[in-house]
Length: 552
Ligand SMILES: *[C@@H]1O[C@H](CO)[C@@H](O)[C@H](O)[C@H]1NC(C)=O
Ligand SMILES: *[C@@H]1O[C@H](CO)[C@@H](O)[C@H](O)[C@H]1NC(C)=O
Ligand SMILES: *[C@@H]1O[C@H](CO)[C@@H](O)[C@H](O)[C@H]1NC(C)=O
Ligand SMILES: *[C@@H]1O[C@H](CO)[C@@H](O)[C@H](O)[C@H]1NC(C)=O
Ligand SMILES: *[C@@H]1O[C@H](CO)[C@@H](O)[C@H](O)[C@H]1NC(C)=O
Ligand SMILES: *[C@@H]1O[C@H](CO)[C@@H](O)[C@H](O)[C@H]1NC(C)=O
Ligand SMILES: *[C@@H]1O[C@H](CO)[C@@H](O)[C@H](O)[C@H]1NC(C)=O
Image (cartoon, rainbow, N blue to C red; front, side, top):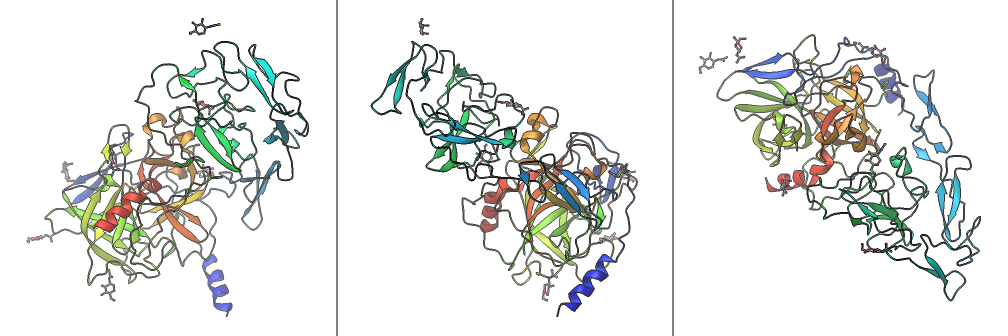
């Protein structure tokens, strides 16, 4: 029974895929000239429609380094790689941290991380004492600061600090000028309690995803409130009956807080319900998901072979069965449709694409199921579009494209639109966030700089998810980014890091299932250092998508 499968594997992996030339990647402007699509020059402005994809097939498995946390990558003879992890990291890509506190008992204290072996220590909560945090001696020595007086309570471990005038806090550590400016990003005061008066955990507490804050001077081996992630005010982690949670702190604003701070969107680790997720926050649609016609999503039947990781290669048939070619011709013309943008099939009658791909003066149709736009293929399906739904808050400014997302409702024949086949399938809507640095795939019918024409061949490439914080740092995109966008690609500005077709899919895989995670949107030039590609962040639009699919 196994034999046919093995034969298929050998047969496919023996294929040498034609190698694409490796041009330097740049964005081009797609100008529509009557029925002809004219690709003209490139420009760095953002209103351009990018239809570029990257083709550098010589990227090694260790470049970019797939090993995290300074792990060293070794190329294996098999063509794969192996990560040699630095303590205390473990895992195939050194992505996990060994739980150094697992067997440690810290009594009345917290197990916190340290830089050196054994990578932990017990930090006792006063009045308990090192090393075991079991012995207490209230007021000896006095834990009260700033002239506060320590008063013993009834038990050996109870005490209170009577603070000098204008000082407060459990240890009188909070001075009269302890307040935060703006949204508190520069706050370095000593408040260590949340609005609900829970004591903050040290930032190096073993269960806190410290890596996220590493290298930030204001975050360290202390439990003072901070705002390291651009939230609306200082906050901290707390231990709520054994659950790691977070909450805002009772730090005073120095002046009346302004209201013009960008709304908070700390995506990592801090879910809206104040819960903490080790690296993913579950995305539960607030409304019921739309009922789907297709039986399944996110599965391919082509990826039996594990291709080597390299940028821009031709796709195998049925490797991206959700890939759609979104085609246009000017309204009223009887010319043929031509490829305009990419799209992603998310159900029999629904295609997700970018809002900037939509032009009211055009008639649109879609093609799917093939890997070459110019070849006839019985696996192809062509469908008309019944309705186009652009996000209500889609905005195009010289700075960025906001909420760059749209849905195409396909025209049904006898109640059906696309037929579910091996080559035509839907990608799943995500239910979880993927961690940063996840390797995901973009695909599309791109163009190369030399040709200035759309490649008829479906191409794909690997990109890494980049943290929002990093992408919003001043030397990258700064405040041009909002929470409707996300970054993926390579910071080093490699030639293989450019965008796929506008509107096309960025899919991430988990347990053999592919999720549509980004829609190719925009970027500032291509292959430039610190200018990775920008994608519409699909997780932000789950409710919007479900609502439109249900209503239509
Ligand atoms: C459209 O294309 C034609 C032929 O290539 C050219 O002569 C004309 O100037 C173009 N129009 C615009 C608006 O670019
Ligand atoms: C392709 O990638 C390799 C390895 O990263 C690099 O040495 C080479 O210069 C790249 N080619 C082009 C045209 O950028
Ligand atoms: C405490 O604060 C009040 C109001 O700011 C001020 O008038 C007073 O002098 C302060 N007391 C001390 C001891 O600094
Ligand atoms: C450190 O955190 C502050 C806010 O507390 C932030 O403004 C700054 O960008 C962070 N620095 C680094 C290196 O992450
Ligand atoms: C479009 O239709 C008109 C008449 O309806 C015809 O004269 C013309 O040749 C057609 N053009 C094309 C490109 O088919
Ligand atoms: C789907 O299958 C039906 C029945 O075989 C066929 O009539 C229809 O044309 C197919 N749809 C597409 C878009 O190919
Ligand atoms: C559009 O923006 C407005 C104002 O911020 C907001 O109230 C509304 O919910 C947004 N619409 C959608 C569909 O997100």
